[in-house]
Length: 206
Picture 1 (tube, rainbow, N blue to C red):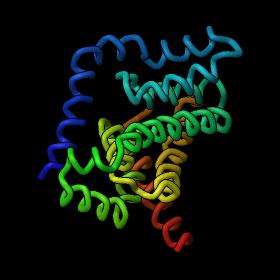
Picture 2: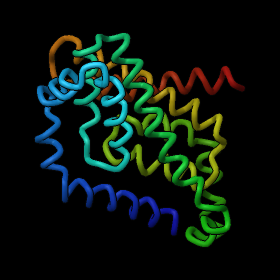
Picture 3: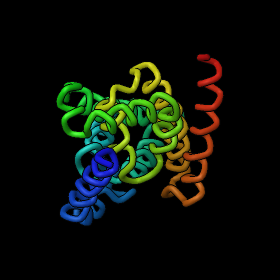
């Protein structure tokens, strides 16, 4: 039961941040505004784009819009690579935040039963959860922190994270390169492709 409360607490925390600053940040980081930020930054535009995607872990930055802008400015290939790096770093940051909480503290917060249930969940089905969560609002932060908290095997986490971040980065970058904002159907691709990649990757690893 505490594990459920943990998910709800993290989700509520993310929603609170969005509720307080979401409108302001969304107005600032429109597609046109994001393109202008990257272009005005000159040679520092690409690290700025990565930093914005990493900052999405804490701040209500519309990550898909930023990725689209990166695709417009840098093209599908480079924009996709840069977006993937930013998304991966954001996921690793969340995992690290959860991981630095020692096991004793995690057991105290969740209780031994829920802690072990969380370990089983992320050991057996966590790859699917991590891969598919990248395209859904709120879930990436909650899932990555929880994966670190319950000590999901790091290599398994990185593999699953890659399966979610790579297609998302390149799909939205491709849309941006066409000079359009990301349409709804890209969300479907960002869910289906990571699931397919994880299904393949998990069997290759085995």
